[in-house]
Length: 193
Image: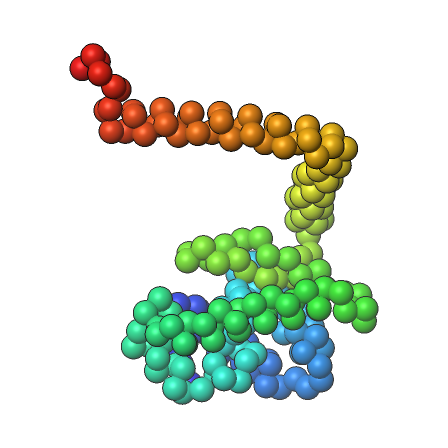
């Protein structure tokens, strides 16, 4: 079974399906076997590829034919919704895998993008990559912490002060939008040509 005009790498799907079918156990155990030797981004799998590898509904000849004829962007609304749900389902399963207590060997990350802009999941190995991953994680944590601290400070100001500041900011935004509108339309009032 092949994806003729598939939006994903068909050789990766075929190889992934072979590994997936040859393993048994829970979803996390099968993911472990699938990603055990995906040590480089080129060896990894994208979320769309994982949909076609792991979810039975998308492994049928009917779906292969739909995608070969139309591609993912031209699917009807019902099929598009099914596909988006499947992608969310795969995302949740990756999250479960990361929290899976029996996993003591794999660090799944998604860094490098494919030609279509999709993130590829693979088992990170090199010290340099792990340091880079840690740096990005710290940056996200700091941004989240800053946002929470800012929210606490705003909350401590009291409702009346916050409402006054919100009204003042709304007036500034309305004025800015009015100026943009005038600039766009060229309407500067009477006496100005």
